[in-house]
Amino acid sequence: MEKEQFLKFRMSLLPASGFQSGQYRMIEIFATDFTNLVAKDKREELRGGSIEEQFEHIYWKFGATELSTGKKTLTLKQFEKKYADTFIALGKKCADYNFNKLYRQLKEAGKDTPQLADQLRQLDTHVNVNWPLAHYKSAVKYLHREPEEIKATGGTNWQKYLPPRFQKRIFYPELWTTEQIENWGKGWVENALS
Picture 1 (tube, rainbow, N blue to C red):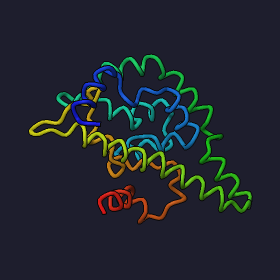
Picture 2: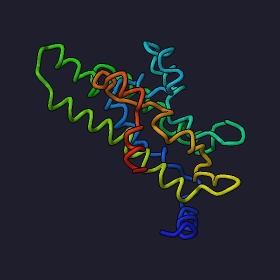
Picture 3: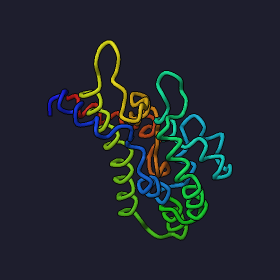
């Protein structure tokens, strides 16, 4: 698709943004400990905090801020109004029953789970590296324009939100080495550029 065709098509999406899938956010909550969904710079500080505290700093909110002011977009305000209570309640319900916690319970019980560990690593890679980078690659192709970037449909800061190296969103951190976490997403970029 040519850039001008894409820009014309995307106008029909305004003011929606990709973060506005309540069902997708619920899948994330089922996948991992709520703390792993907190923005990277607040994750350690809020580890062990309440779901309500963690929800205030959940990563996707920072992708839904206006570039010029840093304030929440209207779409984020509406999304929070509709789903905040649901996400918080689900986060509490899943605290002991998300995929990450269940995997740890199996491991602690002495169950050999190398195939499950491999599947969880694949899910982590697809959701938290491959998809955001594919989305980022499309955004760069269609939204990069000198001297100013074209805003995302929700007016969000896609340049800082999409790259995995900024978010370091990892559902199953115990399944990755320190080096793999430090280089999160880097291998994909190197493969895409080669």
